[in-house]
Length: 192
Image 1: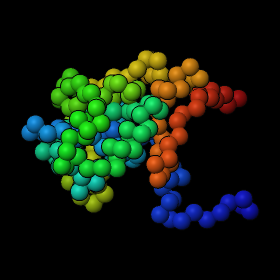
Image 2: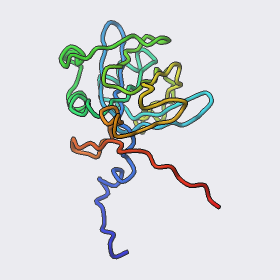
Image 3: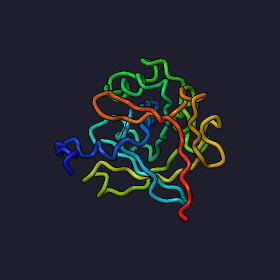
C-alpha cells in the first residue's frame, strides 16, 4: 500500500461521490427554485424510488416540504457553469430561473419545473415523508412519478457516452466547483 496516501476525513466522501450532479427543482405557492446536488441515488426499482440530500436550511427544501414534490434534472456537460451557479446561491430572495435565463416546462404528473434544454433527463418525484432521515441526515426520498431522457445519450434503459455526444454527457462534481464528465462506456466481459 505504499502508493496510497491518507485522505482528510472531510474529503473522504469525494472518493465515492462522483455520480451525476443533479439539479433539484421545486415549486409551491407561485414560487420556484433550482439547486445543484451531488448526493443522489436510486434506492428501489419497483416502484422507482430515489434519495437526494437537500439541506434543511435551503429554500428548495422549504418548497419541497410545502409541496410534497420535487424534480431531479440531469445536466449535460455544457451546463457545468449553471450547475455551479445555482448550487452556490440561494433562491430565497430572487428567482434563479429568471436570474440565469432557465427555461422550465411543467412536469406531466406533479407540475414540478423540469429542465430539458442542456439536460439529458429528468425525474419528477413525489416526496415520501421520512421525518427521521430528513431531520437527521437531510436525506429526502421520492417516488418517481414520471421520467424522460434524451435518446442521444439514454435509450432502451442504457447510457451511451461517445465522442459524438460529449456535450450531453453527465456532470460529476468533484468538489470546489470542479466537474468531470462521463468519457465513454466500457463493455465488461462476462466471467468464464
